Image 1 (tube, each protein chain N blue to C red):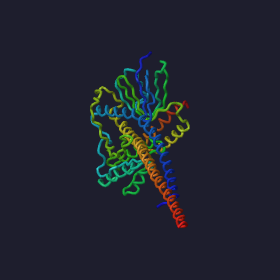
Image 2 (cartoon, chains in turn cyan, green):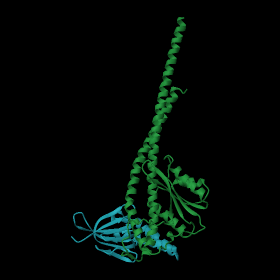
Image 3 (cartoon, each protein chain N blue to C red):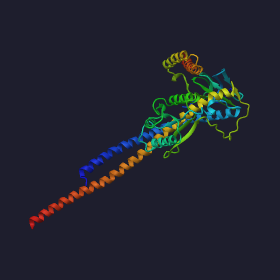
Image 4 (cartoon, chains in turn blue, green):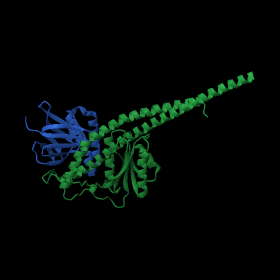
Length: 139
Length: 285
């Protein structure tokens, strides 16, 4: 069995995943970050995006986990990886029509924001999250 | 003295009331279980975000974030009054509103935010402006908390409010809910150091200051969300107690009235017998 690290994905509403992972890849504010076991202590902010992880199943098999993540944080500590996110949706939970509508609304918002950087950022977060949901849903 | 029929009507109406309060008690008991489950589910997040915040503050040299600094000097102080949407929970809402009123008397120049329909109604009766209102338990509670956090962040950073205080209940246990007043903004750094920072070896991307800048708004959002969860759970706990008392009081009244009805009935029978006996004696005599 390849070596693995305890991995938790926590949202305010629930603990979405709690188990062992061989690899966790999330979208940080500076780009994609992959965490392997024995990573140095690390803390980063996450952009909304697709979270991918190779996690251990109960039987010992490895499973690919793919979730649409909203804004959050990833912390790697010796012996533990934690991701905090406002929301994490897997494929079955995603409402494609809703995601499309959100995307369109957010794009409008971005256009309307003009030079207001704060509003721009807010719109971008929504666009990223909508895109992540669509990507996970396989559209 | 009320007649037998009056008393019978009264007992019937009491029984109806008792049925309603009993039903409400059962509903509250079911809802509190759900509210508590939600609270429990949010605890891992609370622990994790608290730990991250401590690590960050330990690693950031100078904290330069608007949330950590006092706000504009001459702006009004912001107050969030958090109550339930509904009543029938004893003095639950009234206690919260009273605490807000006292705070309002002691401090001039306040701006209010209301969470919960009862808070809105109370603030509407008072002087002072209410900036915005959210329901407590209608729609998506987390989304409401996010909207509230967004609004107070905007107001705080743009200098429309100088600070932020939250009046909300604390669920001590099922029988006790205490209104509590605490400062939300500027954020008071949690300085308990029993958990020593894990050294300066943590790598932050892009920088500790940047991550802290992202984390603090989330922390605020989550603080407000968990306060809403606690308010909701406290409300059902208070309602459970209130409805339990109401059911017991109804039972007591039913018992009292039943005794009185029996007495009245007995008095009527005795009176009739006396009349018959009196009449018979008069005829015999």
